[in-house]
Image (cartoon, rainbow, N blue to C red; front, top):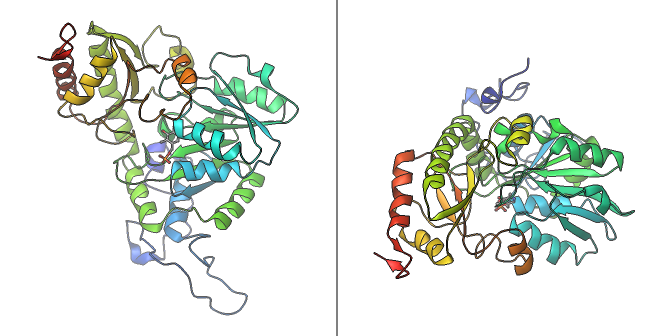
Amino acid sequence: MSLDINTKCLHIEEDEENDCKHYGSISFPIYQTATYEHPEVGKSTGFDYSRLQNPTRKRLEKVVASLENGLDALAFSSGMAAITALMEIFKPGDHLITDADLYGGSIRLFDNINAKNGIEFTRIDCSRADIECYIKDNTKAIYIETPTNPMMRVTDIEEVAKLAKKHNLLLIVDNTFLSPYFQNPLNLGADIVIHSGTKFLGGHNDTLAGFVVTNREDISEKLRFIIKTVGSGLAPFDSWLILRGIKTLGIRMERAQENAFKIVKYLQSEPKVKNVYYPGIDGTEYYEISKRQARGFGSMLTFEVESAELAKHILKFTKLIPFAESLGGVETLLTYPCTQTHADVPENERIANGITDCVLRMSVGIEDAEDLIADLKYAIDSYDGYLGQHI
Ligand SMILES: *Cc1c(COP(=O)(O)O)cnc(C)c1O
């Protein structure tokens, strides 16, 4: 039986564990335990210690593996914990090609922690560059985000997967922005998928989590060894919160995307807005490839206003929409990438990527679209460019 993704958010296909256990509980229980009793020497319930595995975390991992059509998924205490653990599969002297426009925290990890451990990185615009030119003898993987954060550039996953196969490289895709609801990189040839579960999977701006998903047995084995050794697995209660979030993934993604389209339309009509970056705008650079490889365009958008002063004014004067880091929750948020998510990216690189102080990122939530537009409009209209102040 092959289930639709909306059903997979709520049910597990081969649910060998749930039927006779848990007293018929519909909500999967929180196993708030650190350790497990053994029946006798040499026998185990399958659970020994919660750093290695916990039933609630295992349930969540099964759900996420099923949403991404992966063989295995591992749940970590945050997205960064997931990426940190993944990087342990590489060794000193290995080289990775990564996208130039990545989540700032990933760049910080690569430059400050992994580089110190002897791993080399080359950052390029994977949506446009000829990646093959940058492959060296010690290159081991290509690491991309698509759409990118925050410039919403889209890379052809299938194309890069073919190149990775040809050179025997791993293709790693951070799929946080579209979530498994809209995009499944493993089906397009990627080897590993990353998620910040804090974002759309959790969906309520209330829990941190991260995932590594793979369809390769050897990588799953390595990661299982790493998670039990470094100890960054997701706690039982947090696993339960993400499980609960995932139940409504489909309706949240659809509703937020609907709102995003309406907000894009408003922003395009606003003279003080210079550019709107959203892959769902018909006729723009990434529209066709997005339609080919994803089932939707998502609810992340970035826009550039006419001045840094106006950008700061908007962040101060929206009443409904908070100025806050993060994304993918039911509440709409506005982020200022140059001082928040991308503050640690070297300035010349940040500006070369288009992330100037006039750029705002918006994670569109599930509120009423007209209320959101009215809030933005009030903040924009109340700025007097001549006086440079609130009117
Ligand atoms: C937020 C984010 C991360 C990091 O995840 P945390 O859960 O905040 O640690 C990684 N990648 C992307 C694309 C993100 O948006």
